Amino acid sequence: MSQPPGQQPPQGAFGAPYDPATGPDGPPPQPGYGYPQQGLGQPRPGPYTQPGPYTQPGPYTQPGLHQMPTQQQYPVPAPGGPQGRGGWFRGRTGKIVGAVVAVALLAGGGIWFATSGGGDDDEPLAGPTHSAKPTVTPSPTKGGATGEPVTGPEEEARTINAGAKPGEAKVAWIRNGGIDLPRNGEDQFGPWLAGDTVVRALFNTVSGYSVSDGTLRWNLRLPTKMCAAPSQPTADGRIVLGIRHDSAADAECDTLQMVDLNTGKAGWRKSYVRKGAWDGLSDLAMAINGDTVTVGRTSRTEGFRVSDGKRLFGERPGTCQPFGLASGPVAIAAVSCHTADDQYKNQQLQRIDPATGKALWTYKLKKDWEVSQILSVSPLVVSLKHPEKWAILVLDADGTYRSQLSGGPGDYQLKCERDMMSLGRNLDNCVGVAADANTFYMSTKYGEFGELHANKVVAFDLATGKFRWSADAPAGQAVTPLRTEGGKLLMYVHAAKGKGGGIATLPSTGGTPRFVQRHPASGADLERGIYEPRVVYTGGRALLTPSRISGISDDDEVDQPSVVVFGG
Picture 1 (cartoon, rainbow, N blue to C red):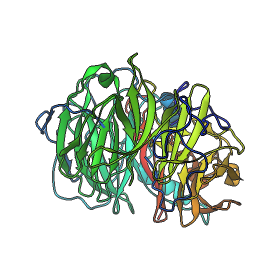
Picture 2: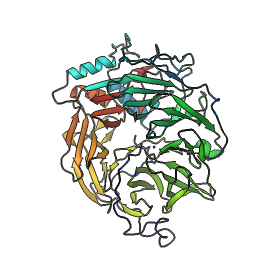
Picture 3: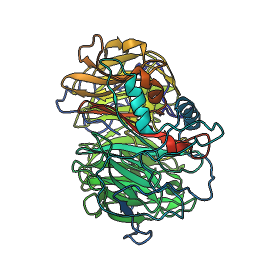
Picture 4: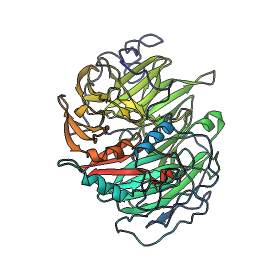
């Protein structure tokens, strides 16, 4: 999930390119608005909620533009295929290369269940609740030119587990994509947790599985393909997805669909009008804060209540408009101010009231600095970019300057999702960063596209911004931070050739990482083939989902793993 060339911050050390002492127009204004003052801010207690990732007023419609989504309570007989494949690849830079590597590493695989795909001839089915274990749908040969036998997920898990050594966590279950996707594949959204259900969303289908054994709990077929999603659902397990207006190749991403992740039932749906060149060119960015979903693009933002779809706020008066937010308990917005030359620059950070959209405080960035990513909302840590410069800024809860990161071994790497042609995007989609009240963690560079090498975990003091310590990745493998828990840093250790991955911990004081879950070496190829994985560790289980599913030959993506679970 690295950013395209020219858009990602300069890799390597960051020092003090963002001078906190002065602004472009003289001394800084009073605290809470404008440039940071020296010496402000103390460490703020409070849990860190990881990020994961708005529009303008205008008429919107109630459901009726599309047929209603249909819920499937058991697998349908076979996947369908979208008609009229084609179209330019609009995914993230390097996705095709990553998909090639992923497919080359995988052994192929049948599917435990078959769900309806994107074909016009597919008819969604409904029936009684299905609670039996998934069953293998046999397939005699692998798609494409090889003609190699297919290994279904259940058989693949058994084979891997038979080769697991004592102390290695076994594969609990595997789910394959099961959907015939358009050429070049599709992004996969999630995973999201709702109680003991894990949910993934791919193309036009949202699916919920039992975390413990992979049983299909529900399957929701949407009327059109998904185009955007927040990184987090609400606390009670609801999410709002962005979907296309219709099935046309150039259909706009202008419709919202609420889904209850506990039951798989579709709730309210609304569409809105996208106006003007900036609005039309922008991709959708979404975030959930409390019971509000914000939906926005480069120059327009509006909020809806998740529970009932009521529109809460829209375009503000004036030239400064929010264009991106981060999901979590605090609504932090990146704001651009329109200039006379029709550019959106002069950016700000704001904390907004998610119920009204009004700014609670404003922090103005220096000229030509832009908000790149919101790395944490509590504490507030923000990645800023400038031509040839990069800074990571830390603010207090009231919007005053706290520190900026400096020092350390350098060669840092942020792995973030961002479309090369996107003008609007989620701001909370970087993986490999974590924070607690006093410390921020990131990693040094570890490579791309399956060619990973050992790296370091680096810690910074949030009160001063100064480098505290670094620690080598365990077992000579690559490592990325996940989150903090109980005063320790949880990390994902990437699989290497002949070595399984796993979950490791480090105390906040540094030291030597300790594995709390080691994945089997016999499953290293499976694990390495999960392209740019999103990793969730909960209840002794590591859930891995690829950020994109694609294939080389027709139907390859049907057999690619979409969820892999170790331990439990």
